[in-house]
Amino acid sequence: MEILHIDSSPLTANSSSRRLSRALVDEICQSFPEAKVTYRDLGITPPAHLSEKTFLALINGNPIDAEAEQEVAAIHHSIDELRRCDVLVIGAPMFNHSVTSQLKAWIDQVCQARLTFKLTSAGAIGLLTDKPAFIVSTRGGIYADAAHKVLDHQEPYLESTLRLMGINNIHILRAEGVDKTNPGRQCSEQQSLASLPALLNKVLR
Image (cartoon, rainbow, N blue to C red; front, top):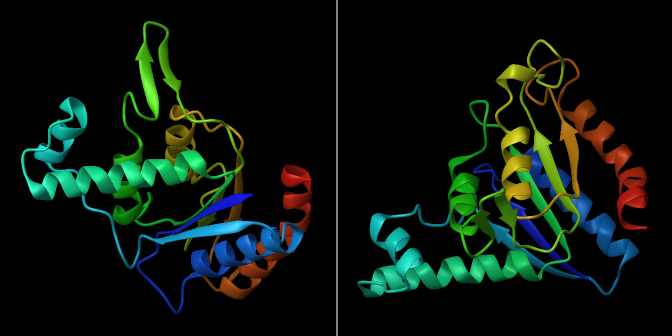
């Protein structure tokens, strides 16, 4: 089993998404000791935002300079990691009702027509093999209830982009209110951690 573990929070020491995504990966590795983990810390080492020359090079296959050639090679490497993994884990804190710019940059790199999806007369078709994908979703406030769901451009966005590429086996490990007194960071994290065994038993066993 190959696990692609992605963190995207710019916070390090006090990040709920980092703690929970690490706990999830550790739990998988305990059940599957042969698992190999590829770790990408987008929060610390963010991918480059797509420039015009890199975008055109991806389309026509002709980088116009060494910088574009290097960026195209990095994008293909990221796509290969995503294509090769058996399990995907994304640590995704909500920032301003959506994902971090670091995670958005990675999505813009790997979500590429003719590489991870294709456009047909019947609509877009994903080119990646379906696999379990875990979104570790952390929010400072409460957004899963009916009154605030309209403000959630984080989880629906991640789910739709994964499905665009052919990944439909998506599961969310959520911790809400991590910046609030009630339920509070510690309580919310503990609730998420407590749900891990049942979630992994349902998805991976």
